Image 1 (cartoon, one colour):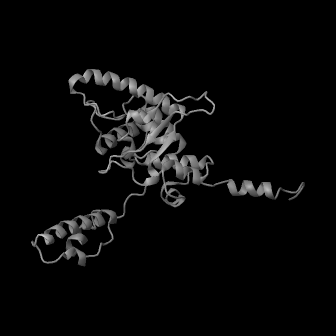
Image 2 (cartoon, helix red, strand yellow):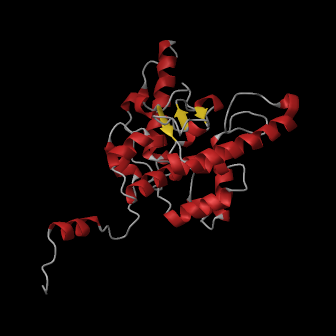
Image 3 (cartoon, one colour):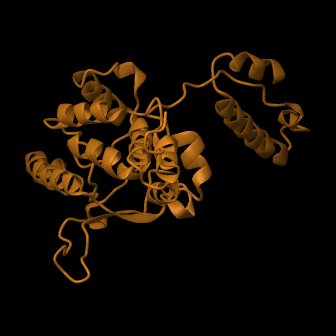
Length: 269
């Protein structure tokens, strides 16, 4: 078992090795309960360090705008708009239903009722979101509202063409027969759009739109605490250390603040 894990460590990440060990442990636990084996040898094995994974990155504002333009005429447009503009996880969008989307709202009411999306589900086995704080309702920008309305109209045409073959699961993002998208569907479609946008398609994956949402908001001056709540993190640590990427090569905030605090004396050198 140690030799097998060591060989796998050259192919997969440490996280994957940990998952493999866990699966094996559970399988042998069941065999042990049925007197098929005398001991669980996996308990004697340590998880070796695996292959380094590719660090996630963020789109710049120009790249994000290029991606949105490239997606406009595709079936993935609304998906990309929501990923970039509200920072939803890809697993949350694949499980999103129309009953959890409010495109009516009452912006003129007092107080206003914003257009919103309820991220209450995911494609995880339990159907629940990643964590308790991940279950959230978000106000959505006008661009998202427009994209979702267009997407709903397009889906109605597709549903009519499918006829009796349509399986109504109320999904916002689905196949041409109304069934759930899998990760491969989204990844392939996203890379096609990325290539059209002038990006190196094989270097980008859908989850990096969520990283881009965090980074672009941070770069525009939104407090980290607010961003953390929007993306459903329990605290700001993960938001800052994993998701936020520095988009500006030289952050000016410190120098600008100190210029206000200690203004340059008139006529000083």
